[in-house]
Image 1: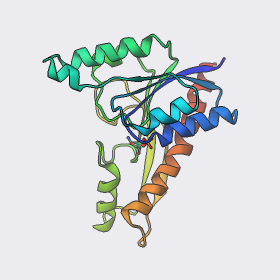
Image 2 (image 1 turned 60 degrees about the horizontal axis):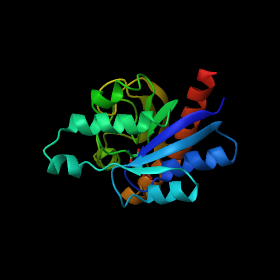
Image 3 (image 1 turned 30 degrees about the vertical axis):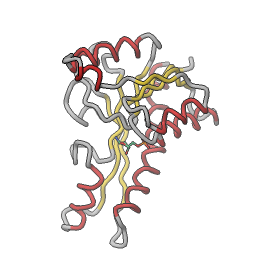
Length: 200
Ligand code: GRF
């Protein structure tokens, strides 16, 4: 049965594009039923619209301006997402930490992509930190991972799939970032294939 995916983004949406392309090429038996962004300028919203996927902009600022809590923001986000009846909620470059006010609505159904190997470089600067660690001679490679998000731990959870990414002496931050994103695109689609197959 075709899996229903809701994808949460905050930026360029190249990983969303990888999912949309895999669906179009029949590599992924899924349908993106909704894309939500916390940033209105996120190019991923354009990508979704071009693919005919419904989008929703859900900013945090109005909650902050009204003195409303992050919990309320997350609870409202959960209602928006739940209305689309997802089988999986995919965090593809979603830059907010989700509290249990959101997660409890989708137990073991939230999937996060992170540009580092399991247990390495949590947070929003993983690629830069890996590059710096390489330059200090501390690591020879980095990687990407796709994991479930059962709780509020940042970029940690049961790993569905990870992939190593080599770092070369000739690399700049830009060349490494590009290689990592290319690996993310493949790894995310493969991880979703596994999850969807496991549901059947
Ligand atoms: C990816 O590297 C993702 O792992 C990280 O943010 C980036 C989003 O890229 N959380 P994109 O918006 O999918 O192009």
